[in-house]
Image (cartoon, rainbow, N blue to C red; front, side, top):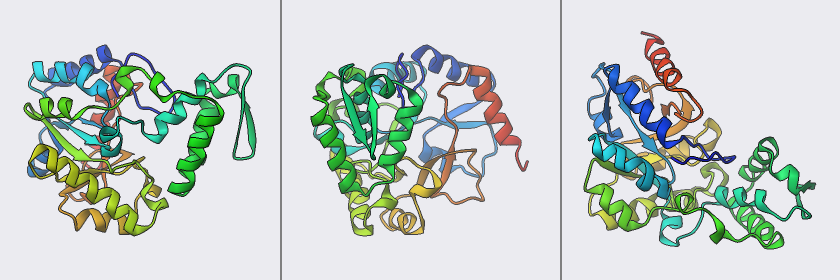
Length: 288
């Protein structure tokens, strides 16, 4: 997410910092490609970067896209189609809203009671988020909806840039150098749901984007994206449904010898410009 504010549970980078990071890379001879372009030349050992955005937030269109378009820089955006279709929030963003509850309120989550002041603390909220990631999908959704009701939380109170892209936004970016991949329908932890449900999440999201953009969708991003969030069953679903690759949130470079259905990435969030490039260079030098 590209936004001037930093909230728990969301990977953010300020617009000015994002622009400077990209400029910093360009000045040092890096070129930019979409994920598909990157993999089409996977034996090319020149300095290449593929920019990716997860979830499909409005801020990609309002904050990042103008700069990318102006500089002819391609990128890949992974869409959570259910939230886009329903003008809804991803479940993690609904949890973010709990930090705004009335100061006198208390909430009980996983047999622990939290005050409003505690819910404003990053450490507390990360603990709560981890708990919800451990739940089966149906239980997670039910408990989150109960919490929102108990706390009188208004999902419409979220800032405009924190909402999801519209299909009109997506169509505008699709005309430029922006590639779209799928990130499931409802952003579940795929290893926490039935295999048949996981396949439906992956395939329905793919079909929805293809129906709207009238072109094949061949890139996938695992929700949450850590090692425990996908397994061989999930990888095989992705492989067998027309995807050329899948990305994770595990830090590291892309290596041609590694599994293209478990590609690593490097986050730009909370890193100074030089540290981003230093991280990339360190990864390039590994096993060189």
